[in-house]
Length: 208
Length: 149
Image (cartoon, rainbow over all chains, first blue to last red; front, side, top):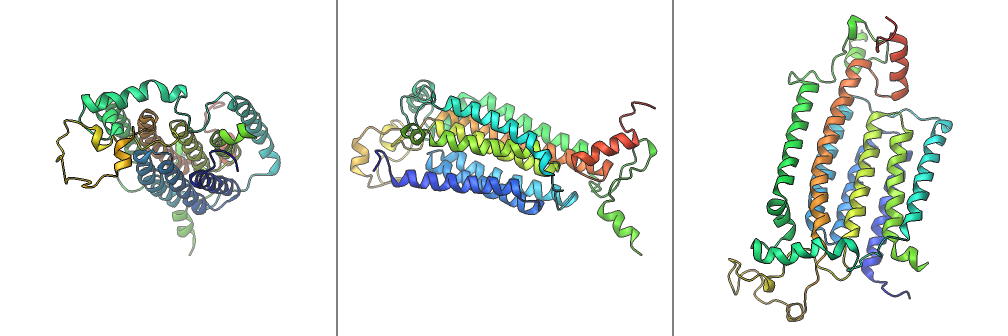
C-alpha cells in the first residue's frame, strides 16, 4: 500500500471522479434543462470536496450561491429563451479540441513544479496565511479566521464585492427593464423584422 | 507514479478546467456556453482551495483553548468536555487566505453570470435565437451591423 493512502484520499478521488463524469456529461448533453441541472450538481459536488479540503466557509457559499442561486438564474434565463441546444457538427469541434489539448499539455508540463497535495511547507501555505492565523487570535477576538480576514483585514475588498453585486443588479435592470416583458417580445432593430426563429409568444399567435 | 499521485488534485482540476473551456469554445448555444464558463470557474476554485489544504489540518477556525481573552464562557459553554488529546497537541490549520479569495470570487462569479444571462435574454429579443452561427447569419443577411448601408 502506498504511503499516505487514507480513506479521506479515497473520498477525495471519488468526488473528483464524479466531478469529471458530470463535466463530460455537460459536454455531451443537448437538453438545456439537463445541462443547467448538472451545473448545479457540479457545484454541489465541488462544495462537498471543499468540506474535505477544510474550506467550510467556501463550501457553504458554493452550495448556496453556486448550486442554488446560479441554477435558479440559469433556469430563469432558459425559460425566457430556448430549451435545447443545436448539435454542433464534429468538424467544428476539432479546432476547440486542438486548442484545449495544447493548453492542457502545457499545464500538465507545469504540474511537476507544483507543491504536493497537502504540503504544509509549500510557498502558498508558509507566509501570509500562517501570519493571519497567528495574528487573528490577538487582533480580532473571532475564532473564524476566514471571517476575520474577510470582514476586517480585507474589508475594503469585501466592500468592492458588494459594489460589484450592486452594479450587476443595476446592469440587469437596464438590460431587461422592470415591465415584465423581458424575453416575451421581439425587438425590431431599425424598424425591420428579423427573419430568425419566432419566439414562443409569436408562435402561439400564429396558431389559429 | 508517485509524482502523479502527489499531484492528483492538479491533474484532475486541469481535466475539469479544459472540459469547461471546451464547452465555451465548441458549443454554439449561449446558455450552454455560460454553463461551460461556470464549470471552468468552479474548477479554478477547486485549484485554489486544493492548494490551501494542509495534511492533517483543521478548518481555519481557532480552537477554543487558543483563543484567550474571548468573551465565551470559560467552562460549560460550547464544548464542556473537550477532547484531551486534541487539547494537548498543537493544532494545525489549513491556509485561510485562498478561502477568502475564493469566497469573493464566487460572489463576483454569480454577478457576472447574471449579467451574461441577461445579455442572452436581450439577444434573444432581437434575433429570436441564441445560437451563435444563426446570429452571425442574421447579422449578415439583415445588415444589422450597418456596414454597407
